[in-house]
Image 1 (cartoon, rainbow over the protein chains, first blue to last red):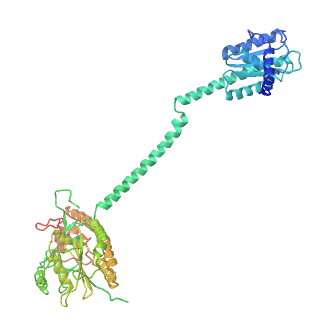
Image 2 (image 1 turned 120 degrees about the vertical axis):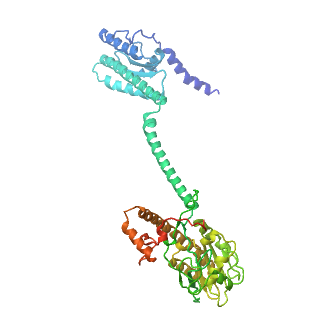
Image 3 (image 1 turned 90 degrees about the vertical axis):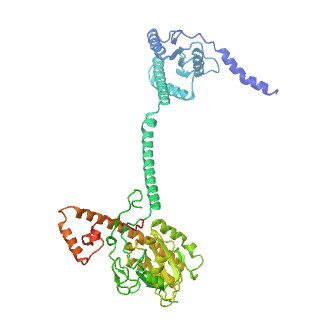
Length: 249
Length: 260
């Protein structure tokens, strides 16, 4: 016990220290946190306009953070971006494009969903990857930041629309019998089965009736005028006489 | 049964519609005409035959074997094929009788006597097949009632009886009798089908003859045969242009005796 306790403290303390050392600023009123006005007013205004449109129309929160407070020790840029996104966004899809101005580090993009599922995480990772691959083609870092934010907004919009469409499809399939199951395959299959069963039943009935008739109805000869003779009431005597052959053995 | 589901009695056909075979005297084998009271050649008739056998005839059953010649379980062995035969042709019944007749008692006369004098006779006796075997002379005969007579083709039934005789020669009693019952079923089936065809053809021809002015040539032929009282050569049961007068009058009902 004496050995385990220091070990646990050793593991937990750096985490606590990291969490306590980050001094989060209050969430920005807009979408761009650029205290040093590093992006420039024109680029910042465009970003605010476009990202505001994403928020209004699609309930997406894409934030551009130009971090000027220094990176706490033991914290990566991606980790910081994730902490910022989770802290500032309480619901829905979000993305944070984080960059430390005038540093050698490349801007990072982190996205998430408060109501995330494993399938959503995969889709979000794909969206991040796509937007990064497109946005990082710009020449200047400022242009890259702007492009990353806009691309991320588009990707998340597509992702959300796609998810909504998929949900509608699932709901509509659950609500009514699908065209494949209810309309095409099942009637064709059941129709063929019913027809075959009826045909077999009919053949069986005919066979049974035939056999029953064959079993029950005997042969009946027509009545004739009897050729009576020799005063005999019932028969005129034998017409066929054969001899038993002698035994060969 | 035809006509059984109606109140009208069954239609009756002339026997010549189905058979042209001659009938003969059991005693002298002379050819007879129908309705002969006694044989014109020898004067034989049933009354004279009865005097030849001064004892009571037994009632007919499937097996009559007073001398216990056949194996004991033969009746049991024949039960199934007999039941099949009765089911196939409910009108027809069959009896096998094996006796030892003394010399001077012809088998044909004995068979004639037994068939007509056996007790408990009713209309079904006319549909009876009676196979009688004389163990002394080694002969087998087949007798049939008047009702069944027109439907039996002599050559076919003789062949079946020969088969039975051959089995008896090898002491295969069970095989012979069951085989004969099976043959009987087949022969009766074929005869019934042929009878249906002949009766249908007879009805068609009778109707066509009834039409005025259409079948004058055929009527003339019929008249010629009527006048002569004999049939032209090549006459057959199916050729009703040459049927005798009573046949050409179509379907008649016998006023007194009715088999069914």
